[in-house]
Length: 243
Image (cartoon, rainbow, N blue to C red; front, side, top):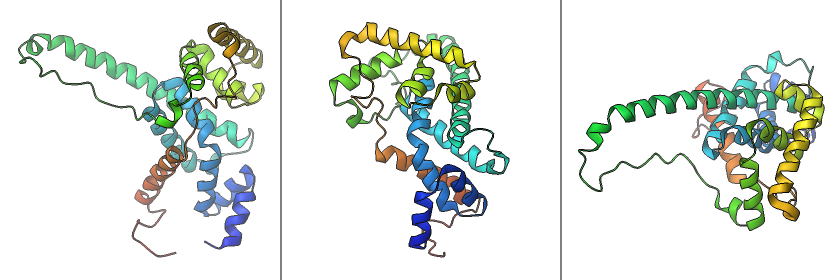
């Protein structure tokens, strides 16, 4: 890509990047993804409580956003629109996972008799779905904050993540979550009170950089969206040197 064009993309605001994408400049979409990956990931993780599931949800959300760029009418900020897509995707995954867990539990109970016949030491381990980011757990204070945020009731957790950690305006959080702005403010205040009670004087969500978004995770999400673009014929294959 021409260096000047790439520089222009990097300086462009979100609306301009969407316009570039609509005009066929897919590199602008990469910049849009990297610009908002952290916020979308944090929103998804606050709902799903699982790093790998949250990454997958963000990839799906980006792909849906890309497919519907032509539908974006700027009645909301791009970041709000993208976060709303991500929250909806995460909620859908959570409902699907709960249904799947119910089926698994039912199947487990039905096969209880067969399980007892397994020889000692042959228990099948649970699938490892998490990919813990070791760097995100090094600081003890940050770890405590993450644990306490995870422990917040569902109705408070996503509000706190978007309003308190990502600093989205209350009006935008209300748009994303489909609730009155006054409700956002009340739930945010309640979440802060719960966290302050739990952590006492240690509470400071910014000092610890809770749920830090490593470059490797960002790269994985972008690469995952690229795979879908290649499958749709929008990007050349990894060994294709055409421009």
